[in-house]
Length: 380
Ligand SMILES: [Zn+2]
Image (tube, rainbow, N blue to C red; front, side):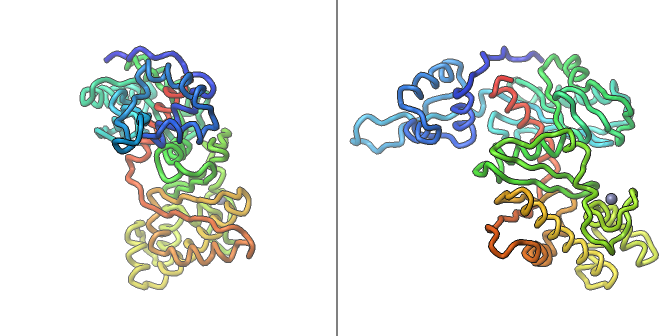
């Protein structure tokens, strides 16, 4: 497995041209010039090196015959480069192989036994190798994980892996694969995937809220993720949402973690029923009208609405994407979520699109691949 030679880093506006075509192509030159406010001559000058290095290609003319000399729309060749995205959990490595437009072409999952940094890096390298064997060559690798990520290279606060000290994970994996490796926080990587190739690709401003074992939150402003280290801390988890709600492990009444995570919801129902119940059973019981589960689930749906209104009120985003392993509750009880959201908004506030959607777990690994694609295309 060898890295493809990296091409000369693009500069300034050339980045914007490459990214615009990657996300929205094929695009006629006239449309591309209009979108980026460039003269035809400048656009020609900027696209030539991109065409020479094979990132951009000219596609079939779209103008009907007899309409004069057609302009050749610009596009990228998605098969020209491939990327591996890896999502680490406490016990598994999820990997995808994608093309340049982040379309998944192969999947791999491997269990993590030994959680020492070297053993985890070995396991990731095996998954990369297996994925690489299914494609024509891998350009680079993106790795996403919960926790604090420093300089796209080292992972801190990954208690779920038992790592107390910062681990230079990108370097450990690069040593084993011989490929460039970039590391990202998992929620931030997911937001990047939505921004470039997902439901946020036409919005410069949006927020992403994920629920499941924890509460993840990221906001994109002017097309950039507001990436402070706090993205990895999970600060949204302890926002108070219900003063009468159950306690979290930090002693907060009704914070997001107590109200929205699968653990918080299951423990509230388990206490009420006097027996341990799992997340799917809670949703089934609520669906059947069992009183304890119904009350807990309804309180959770309202807490979702409150948190979403808070996000909209303080960030002014026109779109909030809600997803994650725990999103089924918000989907099944969406009317309660929306009613509470509406109640928390100013009467004159602009409408906000709430996109509450399921996403396969591989979406996390795909997010990591998108970070690798971005690093490559932007020449970072
Ligand atoms: Zn809390």
